[in-house]
Image 1: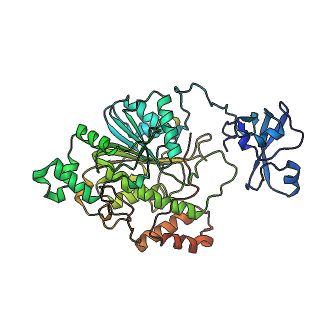
Image 2: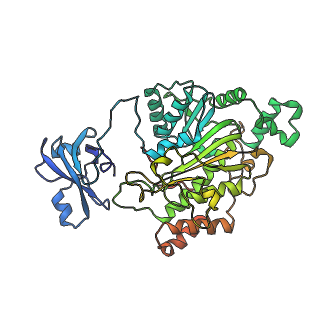
Image 3: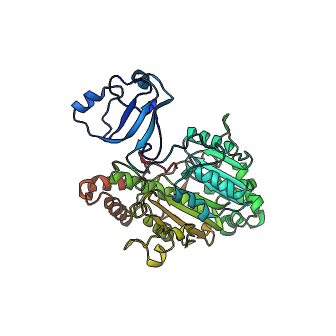
Amino acid sequence: MAVLRGADIFVRGVLLSAAGVVEGCSVRVFADIKGEALRGSSLEEYKRCGHPCVFIGWGESRVSRSQFFSRTEGLGIKVSARVVADAPPLNGLLPGKMYVQNLPSAIVAKVLRPAPDDLVVDLCAAPGGKTTHLAQMMQGRGLLVAVDRTVSKAVKLRETGAAFGVADDFLKVVAADSTRLLLSKEARLELAKKLEPSGAAKNDGQHALACLPRERRRLLALESLSSMNERGVYASPSFPPEIFDKVLLDPPCSALGLRPRLVIGTKAKEVHNACKQQRNLLFTAVYLLRPGGYMTYSTCTISAAENEDMVKFVLDSFPCMELIAAPSATSSKGIPVSTGLEGRLSKDQAAKVLRFDPCENDGYTGFFVALFRKTESVLKREDSHLGIPLDSRSTDGKGASVKPQRPRKRQSDRDRDDAGSGENEGGNEGGNEGEDRQAAKSPDCVPPKRMRHDNR
């Protein structure tokens, strides 16, 4: 898919080659559809076995056949033409000055509208396109926390920020599971007592955290970032709830909206697992957002189970969250706004979200954006009915939350998830029904293995 979107082919991307290929010769480029090619084997043998492949373009070999498989880095094939609308590779062009994104991805930060001096958290930040866009809009003032669970991606994200001149005292990169960022209830109550000793007993003392001025909230966020490794990335913070002005959540998803692509191998179970992970992340996002703050939820998929159903989940589970009409910076160019799917959102709610349809807009990826505002503190209400109740989390003795034992989902939630997942199999939900129901009964959230981000 990367080749169709303008990329050249590095040596690690070459799986097999015809005999006699030398540096500088013209080659035809094929895509291995089913992933059955054995790296280093001959093209003739591959074809003899009847493996399906698709012609995608022409190019020039920059190394010999043996070097395709002996080298670990470097350019292998310079692609000269593609079978789809051509796009030039932009690797290394204006480093630190330009970051290439698909148009829908670039809209997310515009919808959130961070301002200088805001406290903002990007919960699934790698590779950093939206993070650096937020930093630009904030003019390097305030606090921007970028979180990704993979250490190597977090390190790369920090390097990307540095390349764009983002200061370390403004951008704090965290390598952690975003569903584990919150203080436990016990630690929260202790903090509330310190902040307001005379009134800590009211509402379990939680009101003290919901009414702090911005500078005090900024200091609390910085105090939570105490453990930094030698590569400049923070680990395992425990943030007090309701301290961020803006939250950007672009969670792992089924990536069904990415285009162009030759084959879609996503299974219903993968969509189902993505939904579970998205609900967990939304829980954290709502708790980190201060009353009066704004949150965006976006995906690069066209699955209603991961889009409209997640909006409904937020509105049903958190009465303090209000769906706001997402401003479209491109409405004059004819990108359609979702009219909603029957039974998912009301007509009024559907008109407030942005849905980008790759079938109607050639050249754009499928994408979804929703904007929420928090009208009051979530700390005023009990959340024991949710799948991952904050107040049931245990602690490690130091105030940090540890993995709770999650209760089983209600039957209505499981039925809804099964229906949403089956829809994306194009009518083949019957073959996976038993498998999906078994997955729904698991009390733990199992992160999907093949969830992807729109990296552009």
